[in-house]
Image (cartoon, rainbow, N blue to C red; front, side, top):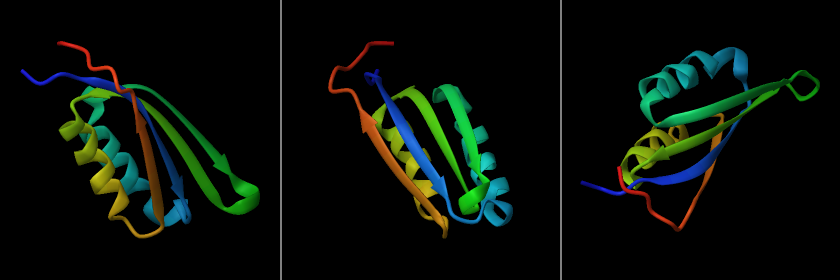
Length: 87
């Protein structure tokens, strides 16, 4: 069994009206690793910012950030704890 890590994923969407549905689809597909979510539409700049608190293996977290990072107009950064937790 792989150990899990806790972390945060920051997502900035440059054109939310165009790509937000795809972002939400990917997040929904990985809902099993999401502990919490906060989304803020920043209308003044026509962007959206989403922060996710996650707990999963590095492979699970990487699968989500990889899908999101391949979307045009989406910037993704993640930070994970160094401590690993057993299931």
